[in-house]
Image 1 (cartoon, rainbow, N blue to C red):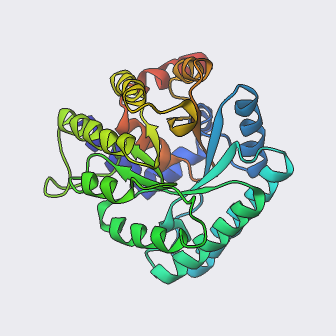
Image 2 (tube, rainbow, N blue to C red):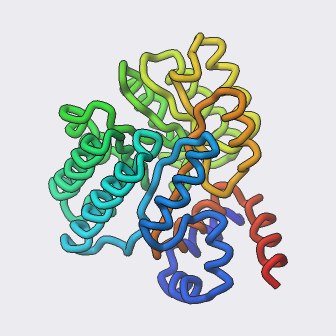
Image 3 (cartoon, helix red, strand yellow):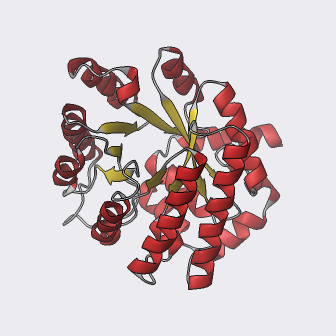
Length: 306
C-alpha cells in the first residue's frame, strides 16, 4: 500500500512543483541527489572516488515532451562526460541514461541517435554508458536499441528488473561475453500479468536471475541494498569462481553508505548511483517506493534541520 502511494505521488506534477520549491525538501533531497548542476555531480563524484567507490551518474532533467528537450538532455550528458574526463574521473565514473529522456516516447530512431551520441562521448572520455530500465512497455524498444548500440559500443550496459516475469529469459539472452547487466528489483507500478506482486516472489526472481548472470559469461552488476541478496551475491561470486573484477555491487547515493564502505573495504567493486539535476522529486519518491525504510532516514533529516 505504501509503495503504491509513493509511486502515485511520484507521478504528480503538482506535488512535484510544490516539493521542488520548498527549501526543506531540497535539504532532504541533498541526502540522495548530488545537486542541481553538473559541477555538483563532478564534485560529489570526486569525493566518492576518493573513498574508493565507482560512480554512475544520471541527469534528472525536465520530462521529455519534444525533440528539443531530448536534444538538450543529450547535450547535457555529452558535456558531463567531457567534464568527468577533464577531472580525471573516468573510467571510475560512467553515466546512466533513460531512453525516454532522449526521446524514446517520441520516436525510437531519435532516441537511438541521441543515445549513440552519448555513447560516442563516453568512449572518447574513456568510460561507458548504461541504459536504464523503465516501465515494461518500453522494454522491447530499449533492448532493441541496446543491441544496435552494442554493434559499435559493445560495453553499453543493460538494466533488467527482477519483478518482471520476462526477466529470466532476458538474462539468458544477455549473459554473454562482455555484456554488462545491472539487475535490480524494479520500481514502476506494473500489472500482475507482467510483474510479480509480492516482495517474496520478487526476491526469488532476483536470485534466479542472479544465478543466470553469475553462471554466464557477462559482467553482472548487482543493484540492491537488501542484506540477504548482497550475501547471496557474495556467495554466488564464490560459487562461480568470479574475482572482484568480474562483477560489481551497485547502490544508491545516500542509502546504506556503511554497507557500501564495508563492501569496498573487502575488495568488492561498489558503484554508487548518483543523480543530479533540478527534477529530483520523482526520483526521490521512486526510491522511497523501492525501500520505504528510507522514511526513517528522511525523518532524521527533518529533525536535524529544525
